[in-house]
Length: 113
Image (cartoon, rainbow, N blue to C red; front, side):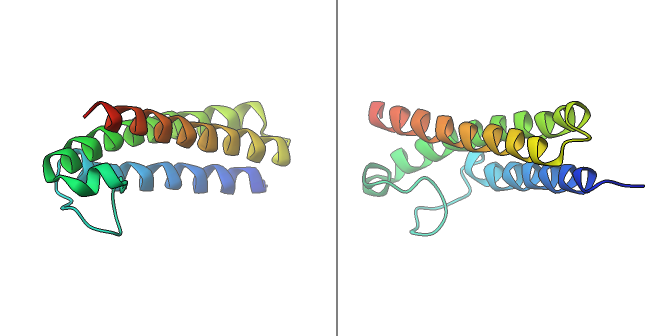
């Protein structure tokens, strides 16, 4: 019998793949300055070269997070296979902690530009 933990692992892996998909256009510098998608802070909105550089960096960080999150979701599944709540909390900590790190590093990088 399949457990809910398996379905959530598949959901978390899909979420990681979605994060990776969102990061590629930023890394490739395909996203023009806009108010909807990208690393939008006053400094990046003020200059097109800064926009592309800051978003490429944020995209690389987001791609790294997506790889870590996918790996953690799979590995943590085997650790917490029988404990649905612990598995979900552990995956949430990885994702939210990783997003916090990505945001802080992106702000620090943008400040250097």
